[in-house]
Length: 283
Image (cartoon, rainbow, N blue to C red; front, side, top):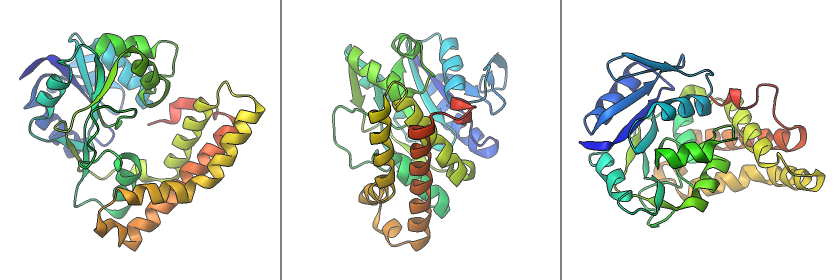
C-alpha cells in the first residue's frame, strides 16, 4: 500500500455508495479520511477525527486536508469507485519533484439513470480514457491528488474551490500531471447533483468568482458568453460521449437542460454576483 498518500472521501450520497467507495479505496491506501454529509470527519471505521465548520464541499475538503499528516493527499467523492492500480498511479505521478497535482480518467458507469449520465458527461466527459496528454490544465473534481503543503498554501485567501483560482496557483508552482492509470468509474447516481437548481447554483458560484474583480465591461462580456453556453457546452459534452448516449433522447434532453441551468447561473453570477449564501451552496 502507498504509505505517503492519504485518500479523502467526501460523501455526497452516503449509505452503500459511501461504503463501497471507502472499501475500494482502503484496499489500496492505508490512510483514509471520510468526510460525512453532516461535516464530521472520521476514519474508515467511523472513529471521529474532526469536524468541518461548514457543510459546503470546499470547506469540507479544506478541513480534511488540514488533518492530513502525509505528503500526498487524494480527493474523491463517493459517486465513484477506483480502478485497480489507482493509488499506485498517484505515487508514480509524484515521483517527479515538479509535480504538484495530478488527476486521472473518469469512466461513466453503464447503469446510471439518464440525469446522472448527463451530469457525468457534463462534468467529466472531457476526462475520459481517450485523453492522452501528459500534462493538464484542468482536473476532474471527483478524482485528483496533490502535495498537501502546496495545496494548503494555494488555498490561502480563497474560498477553497480547487477547480478555479487554487488550480491556477498550483500550475504556477509546478506541473499538473495527467495520470492515465489513475482511473475511477462514476458508478452511483447523484440525483441532487443533477437537479437543475443545483446546476444553476454551481454556475452562479463559478461565474461570480471568475468575475469577482472584473469591471462592468468584464461582467458584460461574461454575461454575453453565458448566453451562448447552452449549445456550446452540450456539443462539447457530446463530443466525448459514447454513441449510445448520443442516440439517447432522454440523456440528450437532460444534458441540454442541465447546461441551460448552468449557463443561466453563470448569467446571474456575472450580472448580480454571488447569492447571499455564496459558496455555501456548493454541496
